[in-house]
Image (cartoon, rainbow, N blue to C red; front, side, top):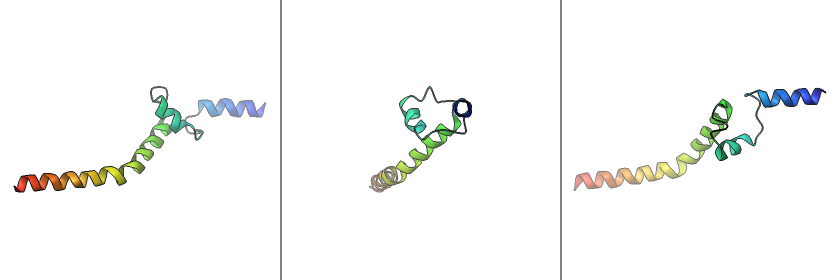
Length: 71
């Protein structure tokens, strides 16, 4: 009985989320759009991916743009 109650509260509570939810939120963002924790996790994953790739490309674009404006 306790397990059943825990499972129900687990499903209804936004703050307690299994590790799969970021993956599920990626697959179907409409379903989890109200789930604040899933959004936070998605944002964290995006922030992890950004610095390596896009910052380098950003610097490259800046260099290109500055060289074009000088000439």
